[in-house]
Image (cartoon, rainbow, N blue to C red; front, side, top):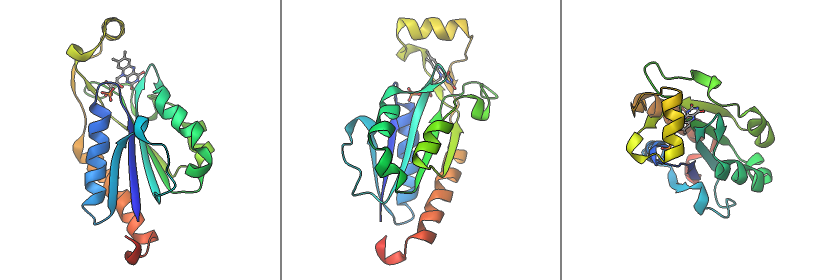
Amino acid sequence: MNVLVLSASKHGSTDEIAQAIGDLIASHGIETIVMSVDDIYDIDYYDAIVLGSAVYAGHWLKSARRFVDEHAEALASKPVWLFSSGPIGTPPHPSGNDAVDVSSIMKKINARDHWVFAGKLDKSKLNFTERAVILAVRAHEGDFRNWKEIHAWATTIARQLIKEFPRSTI
Ligand SMILES: Cc1cc2nc3c(=O)[nH]c(=O)nc-3n(C[C@H](O)[C@H](O)[C@H](O)COP(=O)(O)O)c2cc1C
C-alpha cells in the first residue's frame, strides 16, 4: 500500500505538519510519500491520500483547491483525509471548523474526515500586505501547532489503513 501526503503552504508550517503526519504513518510500516501539492501530477499509483492546506482569509490556498478540481474523479475513488492549518493564539482563533468551510470539497471527493490544526505565525516571513492584515486583526505571533494532536490524528489514519488493507499489500 502506498500513501501520499500532500500539502499547500505559503510559509512552510503546513508542509511541516504534512511531514509529521507522513512520518507517523510511515512508522506503522506503511509506504508513505510526502510532497507539496505543486509537485504532483499523477495520483494513480497511490492507494490513499492525505491532503492539507494552510488557511488564508478563510479559504484553502488556490493550489490545493486546483488540485482537488483537477483530480476530483481519482480522489473520489480512494480513501482521502483532509486537514487545514490556520488558527492562531491561545486558545487558537478562529476555533475548530469556523476557520474554513471545506464541506463542498469533502462532498466532491467523498473525503472521510477533515481536521483543523492550529498554525504558526512568524511575522518576519510575511509580506507587507500580510503584515497589514495581521496587524488589523491583532493576531498573535507564535507557533501554536499541537504536535500531540497531529500525531493522534495521523495514528487514527494509520490504524484505519492497516485494518482496511491486508498486511501483504502494505
Ligand atoms: C494574511 C494572513 C491571513 C490569514 N488568514 C487566516 C484565516 O482566515 N483563518 C485562519 O485560521 N488562519 C489564518 N491565517 C493564519 C495562517 O493560516 C497560519 O499562519 C498558517 O499556519 C500558515 O501556514 P503556512 O506557514 O503553511 O503558510 C492567516 C495568516 C496570514 C498571514
